[in-house]
Length: 77
Image (cartoon, rainbow, N blue to C red; front, side):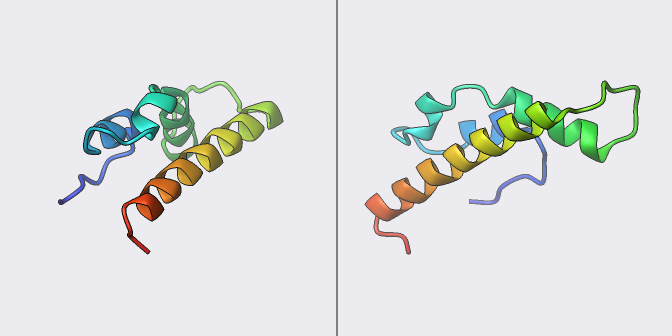
């Protein structure tokens, strides 16, 4: 499958096949997508805080762990 080169994490998550737990456990990673936009593109964005960074890191780790576990269940190294 060819994945689009985008920053929209909702759209990328939705492209996963049915049955992947991350689709339910992280039903809306929209806030992470917003962080990518704020950090990558200039604009009149509110300044991100340490709490924002901690939240983003926690959610990103959780998503990575979920996807990694699913790869393991499917026999993908």
